[in-house]
Structure formats: C-alpha cells, structure tokens
Amino acid sequence: MGNNKHILFIQGAGDDGYEEDAKLVDALQGELGSVYKIHFPHLHSDENLSDFGWLKQISNEIVSIDDDVILVAHSLGASMLLKCLSENQIAEKILGIFLMATPFWEGDEEWVQGLKLKADFADELPKNVPVFLYHCRDDEEVPFDHLELYKKKMPHAIVREIESGGHQLKNDLSIVAKDIQLL
Image (cartoon, rainbow, N blue to C red; front, side, top):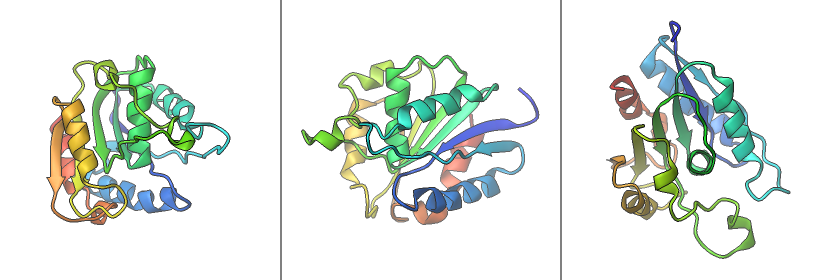
C-alpha cells in the first residue's frame, strides 16, 4: 500500500446530498489527516432504474481503487453500499465498512423494491471485514429504530449509538475517525 490509506466515501441522496455530505468528508479528512486519501465521487441518480443506478456506480468506484480500501457511507449511500457488497463479489481488499444513518428499506411499494436488501444479505458481506454502524438517536431523516433492525441482522457489527447529532451527525465524525484509525 502506498503512502496513503484509501477511503471511498459514498454520499447520501437528495438534491443536495452530495453538498451536505461534502461537509462530512471535510470533517473526516480533518480528523484523519493527510495519511488518508478520501475518494468522494458524485453519484448520479437515474430515476428510471430501481436502484437509481447506484449499485453499478458504487461497484465501479470500489474496483477503481487499486489499493486496500476503507468504505464509508452515509444514509441511502450506506444502504446501497450494503446491497452492493452483499449482491456482488467484489474481490477488492476491503479493510473496513463504516455506515452512518443507514435506512432499512421495507414495504411493498414499487419504488422501494430496488433498494431492499435480500433476507440473507448479512451472510453475503465480505468475510472477516469489520462493519461499524453509527446512528444518532435524534436523526430526523432515518428513524433510530432502523439501527435495531441492522443490529438483529448483523450481530457481528460494531454499533455506535450517538445521543445527538441528527442525520448529519452535526458534521462531527471524530468517533468514525477513531474507529478507522484502529483498523
């Protein structure tokens, strides 16, 4: 691995999701310093595709990094990263998976079908790769109880319940940075 440790940061959705999450990327970079290089691609949504075209984009981004990679994702990006990793054999060397404010998609509505995880998704994730889950109790976008669903499905995950910070974790990723540095 070169001088840098590589992080791929997958944004959340929404009209200003990329701009909002750029603040998270800046915060994380500030905490981690120049040893880490954060890749922050702008994902584009194709409304005609059930997964908005995100799975292919995420997969391509992971594969495009030649070194070991740490995966960090927020909100819709976090749920789509889980879907991508559990449904595709991505041979790249993944050192850790860090998911913030991850929605757990359920229901029979047409629009949600391309976002839902398969029942056995946790068994299909890369083996021997630590998974960290972060969720603020006062998240105004993704209900806190979604974290409980993930805890049941992924008992091996390391869970960080955060008292306050809302959906954007007050743009404070010090807890995430500390976990990344422990890898």
